[in-house]
Amino acid sequence: MKIDHIGIAVESLDQALAPYRDCLGLEAGDVDEVEDQGVRVAMLPVGETRIELLEPTRDDSPVRKFLTRRGPGIHHIAVEVDNIEETLDRFRAAGARLINDTPQTGAGGSRIAFIHPSSVGGVLLELVQHGR
Image 1 (cartoon, one colour):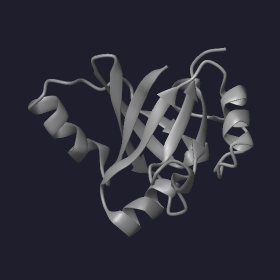
Image 2 (tube, rainbow, N blue to C red; image 1 turned 90 degrees about the vertical axis):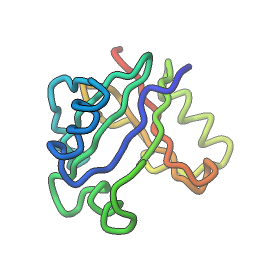
Image 3 (tube, rainbow, N blue to C red; image 1 turned 120 degrees about the horizontal axis):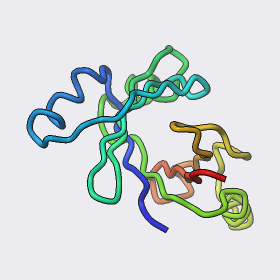
Image 4 (cartoon, helix red, strand yellow; image 1 turned 180 degrees about the vertical axis):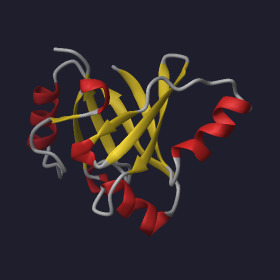
């Protein structure tokens, strides 16, 4: 298991990418739009993990709601898991509050699910399973 990425909510991908690109030399791959989540996503590789910049594409996006309440900043931490259903079952059995009862489609076609911050020490936790 490893940290897959750290999600950062931003108002504008173009503006947010500048310091990562110009000062750190990080390059984003293709920008991906995740219609179900209402976001545009840019992934910046940093070693074995990535920084995910999230720009809302509509007013009812969870990222838009986050930005309205808190402003730009760290939105979530994502952990890569081998079997997302089994991991969700373990959280469910432990009494955790799940945001997603079943996996959703995430950036790059990954399977994702979120665990509510109230169940994980105040941090929004994303489970990510790549490929299948």
